Length: 350
Image (cartoon, rainbow, N blue to C red; front, side, top):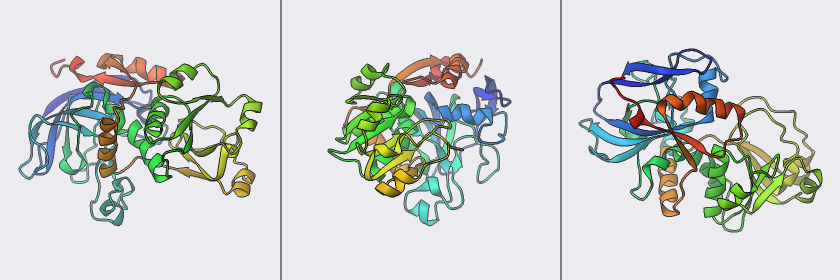
């Protein structure tokens, strides 16, 4: 299938139109016309080469929603016209203990990311959602609940599952005290999901300028991390802290905010961090943990959870030719929403 997308052809993260072909349908494949694709900060990191050399040209995008336009002969879950989604991975071995435990993201043989990785059968490089079409195996396609707004669903496939998984894993429930560091694409979803779970949520930020935005989505307010007195007064105030900051930073101001047995979960930065001070960890039996995305079953679960609780990401719709401007905003930070590309703005004949 001939299609078109926006690709980075080098590590300067500048995106340009790119014509390419999707594979022919295999028996267990679903062919999807992409309607909307979310723009994730990890897309910027990846095409910049921040996480290692990349196989350019590279079409990013792992927050994908669209409609089924064809299915393979063995596909049983989907039919033409269904509204579906594809997230951060498109394949795994399906046989190891982690895959059998519905944790394909931890596949012992390595899961196949939606873009920038060799296809398990052909070796060709996977290309992501900044495009008009995608072909994916049935097991890695999810159903979009009817009550979700398709135009605002895409970020749930990454920002949603990335924050839902640690909230669930570390026991957030009615009455839990949750801190969220950062109110960007990941952070605002962490707030909405934790509030829906019954938690009391506080945003931790360097300033109070986003306080009204935080309150608008259910947070009790903002704890200003540069306010030394306020931080000291908030010692032991949280059971769980979700750290969404996507760059190197210092965790030491935050660990004393955890109560005994509390957990700070890193979901943003992949790479070096400032040197930790261990005293708050040892003296309070506190933990610093990391969390990736969730498995396919759990990603369907968060889609259903968002439908049940009427949770939609805060989105700013852009045309495909505005993706470089979106990357520039992400580079600067301070974005309290998710950019979503309207793929109707991209013509296959362009």
